[in-house]
Length: 191
Length: 324
Image 1 (cartoon, rainbow over the protein chains, first blue to last red):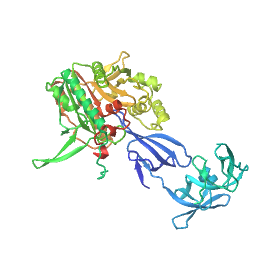
Image 2 (image 1 turned 90 degrees about the vertical axis):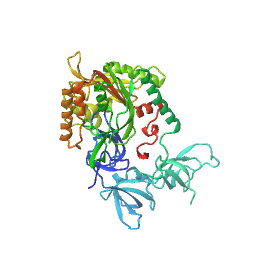
Image 3 (image 1 turned 90 degrees about the horizontal axis):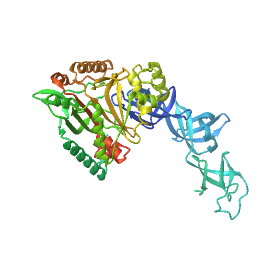
Image 4 (image 1 turned 120 degrees about the vertical axis):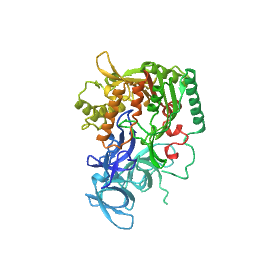
């Protein structure tokens, strides 16, 4: 397995720390006046999501993590696993467990493309696209004429996600939602 | 790293004008005080012994022989050779080089102001640094003075001289996740210092940290504190989280200096670091006699960052590392 020297680590590198794959977010070179040089490295544990800082001696080496981001289309869930297929034409399929899918489960729509992070060939995390278009399945009836008043109400989308929407939205409409904030953006343009 | 598209400077023109003005003010400051400007060579046949500073070198051919020259990491040895040869108080404003990582506050080439004052001790030199900073800022700068021991007691809650090794290891690990297997006290203390103390001190006025552990004396005399503890007559200047200067009441004892060089060389060998020709001509000069003096080296680019409120060293250099 390849390895990195702590002094050459850059944001985006993936390394093993305490047996877990981690992404490097930042690396600051620390050199006390007359002393040994260190690297203060900000890391994200790709399993738990925890972000923290750890100091290493400069030049110490860390094993590279076998982590790869791939584009995959969501197919279906069998109740235990969520099945995805590579979009590169290989039709290769991977089953991600609930742990890997995490919060993304409420944004899973068939035929939509997700970034599936593979660790040692198995799904570690699933990231939704920043914006996704979903149909409203449940909400109070729309209020005619109320388009600019700024009021909002809850709506349940086809994936089960709950978002706050303007009062004029009706069941059956397709909405554009920001998955990073979980907020309504607009009615879908129907492109 | 070379990129044929990127030709532009990294600092803007007004910064370069300010930089030139600061150079001028520094020279005027020393001219007024009758401190002589010198320019010792950038390339030297001998280098420093410091175990934690890596040196750049270059090769040339002279009279059919391959010769290695080392780029100066600071003009300290050469300036002390001048002092031993009878020079009065001297200063040097110029480029120095270190084989270091390039970062927010580090470059491989940077501008250093170094000066030596005959008959001064380190306390008098700290006063003069305040005078210089006052001139450069058009303000009255009176830096705080805090001993190494009190800095630790105040900001870390331990005594750097009496804390046990295992306590230092635990404390260091708690704050940095490093240190449980580190056997070197100084390394642990230095990491604690940069992690916990550096961000706290010198936030308004600059702060001199003084009276370092004797084991971190480098080229400073040792002194006996009122408590009986042996410390180094060394200080460092910190300002808004930045290490700005390092000074000594200079060691003049040739034998003691020889011994410290040998320890450094042994430490480098032990850690399988690259061999280099250590400049023993410093010892010869000390044998001839270095007058009592205090000296300090100050990072001018970092000072400019502070004066101009720039977060990255690139912004005060005409062409920084990746653009040079």
